[in-house]
Length: 212
Image (cartoon, rainbow, N blue to C red; front, top):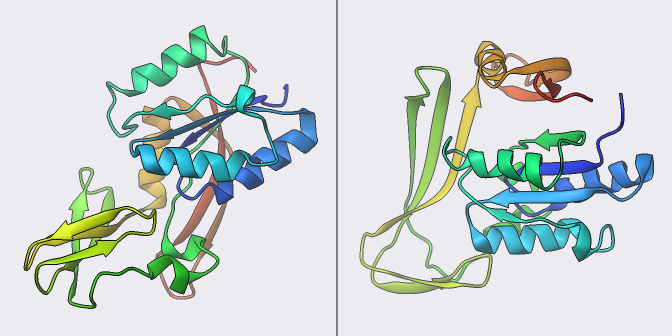
């Protein structure tokens, strides 16, 4: 099996995880092609810049601004894979991004918005396959604040903005999603907190429709 020469990242985030993967791929078989994907243009630009700096050049970068939670928009990724990347071996990743992924938690949370109430809300989603947890900030009055990416936001009194969203899947749900995506798991690592059903699941898969 040939080493993948293309890395497609669903959800760039800060780019730190992608930078590590790109560096590892480069040390194994030469400079890879990097296809970062994100719905947010700001996240896409900044995350891709952080991930590629000093690792790959701009000529090896193909950023895609799409909502990869939409099956219709994923058609774009498939067209790029077939027509641009010519069905060469590809490493696809969907790495979760939570506060724990940042080196400096305090710096990540700093903002000019005045301290006030935060609201947590949990709900069952995806036909009972996951628990979705949202955290929102509620403004104490009319105010302006700066977000972590440097942009400013104006809020009305008691206006709510979502700060964070996380989904927690069961191992059985992960296996069902892989089957629906026509993926075969080659191996995985699973780690759970003591006496807790929650933890981390890291798997490597192959597409049954792509020859490697």
